[in-house]
Each structure stands twice: as structure tokens, then as C-alpha cells.
Picture (cartoon, rainbow over the protein chains, first blue to last red):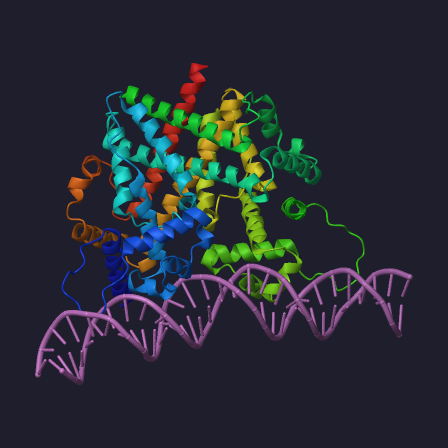
Length: 260
Length: 260
DNA sequence: GATGATACTTTACGTCGTAAGGAGACGTCA
DNA sequence: TGACGTCTCCTTACGACGTAAAGTATCATC
């Protein structure tokens, strides 16, 4: 019984996500004044502007001139709405990266676009990834990067794994960039001041830092990478990790290609 | 003014996280019957057992025979408590991987341990990573992997980036493993049944799947990786992505080492 | 023994997701 | 034409949540 209920729910969710054609028979009752798309758009707008914490059913309803409860005619629950939001924004990501110059430039461009995408919609990063439902637009993104990496000529088994690896990496990097933007921003102080205050607190609270974490301290001292004064320190570091890390991963892929 | 308040909060948070010695003067009033550690332990137990959704101040209080409000004498807010939980569990991760056999086996072992750790505490993956505060135990993990990768002889700049890359990757892979465990588990059906039902629904709701995602379909057909009948399909796939992806990344690091 | 700080409780406020039960709009069939 | 059934959307309500405010009991100090 529970299983059947779950199955029914799964069918409903999938139909919504994949926009199965609605049964278009003439039906009694008032015409729906909203559409699922309008609701999802409003919800995305709220999340983009004020973050996931501001996303409530009542807030979405209000933005559309309705009560929160009105949405339940269109969407079975908030978590389904989030699933729809999640897939919806993935439609922004274009496909068709030119393969003429080889797979590596295409893969690099794709990863960069994905990073930028996550920054346009940082709430995506706080949507629990523990969510096995893939929607059509997220699938399209998988298709795009799969097509690019097929150009490596690697066996399918490896291509699939590399696709997963790239997703993990870009999402993780995007989280670090997002967090680096949040850190000073939250208190409204400059990046420099935040950093100085944080260091001072650290020294005060953990005076034995250098003894406990010798490698971290040594690496920090040896690191020759410098950030220009007018650039945000943490974010520049995070972007650099993205650039270099992507290079390392693609080097690994190239090694596999050469190994045949 | 706001800035000062924020600074005060930051100091309080840091002191808690880093366990700055409490002012041990004899104080009036009843002796505290709880400790911050007990509270954090109780909270971790709840999150481990029933997930992050079950973690409420009242629930933690109840587990300790108190009301939810009692916790506020020890911890300024729930989000601080989560920070403490986050750092606390990282104490489980050991350091001291043998470097005798070279950095690669050590790095592989470290990544595997981190993956297993995330599976012991899957709620870690739903703690928003947008949280720039590092605690002592998370720092210790960074120290460990930094020390391992220092063995590559790469310049500090690169080592630091590779550390970030590995973290991103392992965390992402752990999320996929966790989600693969959740998928069939939620409905209580077997992995096989879940998979079959899902495929049937997919075919029903997206009959043009093969046309829309030709590369994905082709790769799936070509993939020779097989999962034994008694193994969970999705989870085995996810673990394979971890294994292969980690190999690719470390190949990339090796390429950098060889390039000098 | 009065004073005041502290640990903890009870109560309360505003939020949330959403169940329940209308009210009015509309297609269908008598 | 009108009754009926179905639909959208509303109001109300419930039980959760984080936590502010205020009260009570406990202790060290003067």
C-alpha cells in the first residue's frame, strides 16, 4: 500500500518534471489562472534575490497575487517545487560546444560556464544533492558534457566516470567561491578588514596554530600566488583553485587518452 | 555598531569552536549540569540516526532530559551548534598516513577514509558548505592531506590547489553515493524493482529519450561495467566513479610532478 | 541573611508546511 | 433552465520550528 502510494507520487513527480502533456479535455470549474511555469519562475526569482531561506509557499503565492495554499493546486508540495526550480534553471545552460579544436577547450569552456551558472543561482548549492530525480534539463547538461568527452575516444566506461568527476569538482569549486563571497559580505566589512580581523581572532584563540598545523602554515608561507589589492582575496583564491584543479583533472584525462 | 556586534559574535563562535579555556573563576548560581560536548554529542547522535531534518533544539534537549531552551545557556544558536557538530565529527579522521610508499597510496587511502566518513555522517553533506568558519578538527584534516601531497614535491601553490580539488571531488562523490543509497531505500523496495519501475516511468514520460540524449544512451549501451546481482546497482556505480575519478585526478597530479 | 548571578523552565510570538473545509466559477446533463 | 459535480482559490487551523521574555530555584559572595 505504501509502495503503491509512493509509486503514484513518483509518477506524478516525473510527469511534472518532464512536463507530460496535461489531459486536455474540457473540464468543469474555473480556468486555472496560473501555470506551473509561472509558479516555478516566481520561486526561482525569490531564491535568486533573497536565497533559499526566503523561499516559502506563502512568499511565492504573494508574488503571484495569491495565497500560499493556492499553489497546491499546481504543485503537490514544496519539495516538488524545489525539484522543478532545480531543473528549470538548468535550461539556461547551452549545449553545442565546438569540438573542432578538440575536446579539451570544449570541456574547459563547459566547466567555466557551469561555474558561472552556479554563481548566478547560488541557492542550487544548498539544494540537497541527495535527490536522485533527474529532470530533462539536467539530463541535457549531462548529454552536453558527455558529447564533449566522447571526443576523447576513451571507452564509454571511463567517459561516464569522468563526467561524474567533473560534476563533483565544479559543484565543489562553486561552493567554495560562493562561500568566499559570503564571508566578508555578511558583516558588510571590506575583504581586507574581514581577513585581518579573522587572523587576529585566530591568533588569539589558537596561539599554537603553527605547531598544530605545520604543513598548512609552511605551504601558506611558500605560496607565491598573490592577489591584487583591488581583487577579493578569498574569491580569487577559489577561482584559482578551480582553474588549476580543472587543469589537473584534464591532464589526468589526457594521460588516459595517451595510454590508449 | 552592527559591526561590533558581529565581531563579538565572531569571537564567541571562534572561542566555542576552538574551545578557548573558559574563565574558571568560582561563579555564583547553580553548577552547569551539562557541557557543550554533551550537547554536541547528543545532536550528532540525532543527526546520525534520523537525519538533519530531525535535529531540533527541543529534540536535543529532550535527549539530555532538558527543554530545548536549556541549550541556549551553552550555545548561542542552532547554527552555531551545527558548526560545532560539523567540526566535532571531523575528529574521527586520523592523520599520519605512511609516506614510505610514496604520496599516491597515502592520498588514495586518505580519500577512501574521507568517503567512508561522509557515509557514516551523511548529514554532513546537507550542511551548507557556504560556511567559511573552519574549526580545529577540519583544519587537522587539511593538515593531513596537505602533508601527504607535500610529498609530491610540487610547489606550494599547486599543492594547495590540489588539496581543494580533492576535497571537492570526494565530497561530491560522497553525495552521489548517499543519494544512491537513498533512492530505493525511501520506498522500501529492492534496488532492482526500483530501477525497473524508474525505467518504465521514464519511457512513459519521455518516449523520445533516445533522440534527445543520444550520447547518454549510446554511452550507456557501450558501457561494459557490470554490477553483480547481489550488489546495489546505483551505489556500485557511484563507488566506481569515485575509484576511477580519483585515479584520473592523481594521474593529473603525477603528470604535474613529472613535468617538474 | 540579603544580593545578585546563573541554570533551567514555562510561556509566548512569529514563522513554516500543509490538512480541512468552505465559497464561488464553470462545464455538463436533466 | 437549473441542479449537480468539479474545479480554483480562500480562510482557518494544527503542530512543528527557532528563540525572546520572564519566572523560579540554586548557589557564592558580602
